[in-house]
Image (cartoon, rainbow over all chains, first blue to last red; front, side):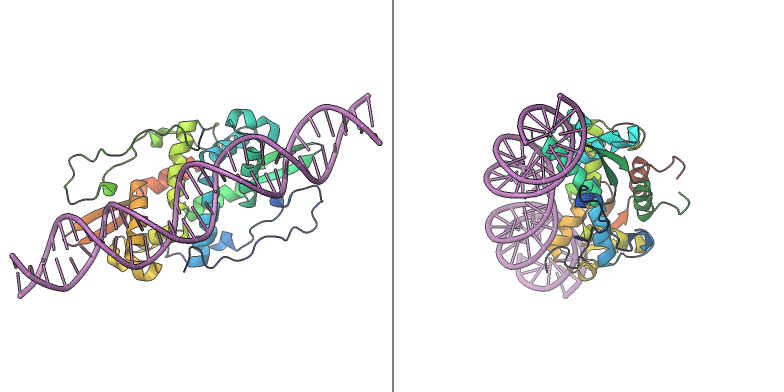
Length: 137
Length: 137
DNA sequence: TCAATATATCGATAATGCTCGATGCATGCC
DNA sequence: GGCATGCATCGAGCATTATCGATATATTGA
């Protein structure tokens, strides 16, 4: 009985996506997450809790929080403009953008040699709702 | 240069608290967290990001999310009533309640042999604000 | 075609975290 | 006092993750 025993598959289904775009930018979780009840409304089921925990885990890192806030402040940011402010190496920054993209929080678009990142606004709002925010928010 | 290099001390200062109450129930983070700007307002500083990540990390676990939702649904729950629904051993449940209490999300009160847990409502609202919810929320 | 650039991936390492059995500690009851 | 109970802590095992150097891939420009 290990942690998170009931995790559905949400990988390896990037279809209709240009080959140049990394998988991490394409595969959404698509797990009915946006229909789950709020945390304070009713006891969470195991599946809902796992889905929610996955997004929270993507946010539970200081580097990724700062990365997200930088993207939010400029509406669109190139990967190469993140290494400096974050104080991390290029592979590490790439790793963090991938984690955020896999969680559906960040959307990447390849333009030439550069990858431009922007927020997926619905995702944060949905998370706030799951944390007990009122519907209209 | 490890992760979270700039973490202020927020432990070992449980004063004026009955000896029978575990430290985890008493020490608040008390790090000006409630004054930080929202994630989407401006780039987060390292300290703010670390504080926020700590609370998010406390939530980024399926067992703890379900624990929190159980407490929220009943307004007050005894530790002994959590092992069953969570499917975890007593030490594990105790570990998770401690993590949530250290993050300021849960408040525990010892009554006789039992410990009763309830939500710290302000904390979730504050987290929602940091995630971009509008002030009134 | 070739060099330069931007990014993704690989492999390794160190740190962190979840879990549980064993144990310690405090409380209540007899 | 003696025993049972509820919870916290300890220690170990195992999995996950953050990080970076090295390398691979893709795009641009000459």
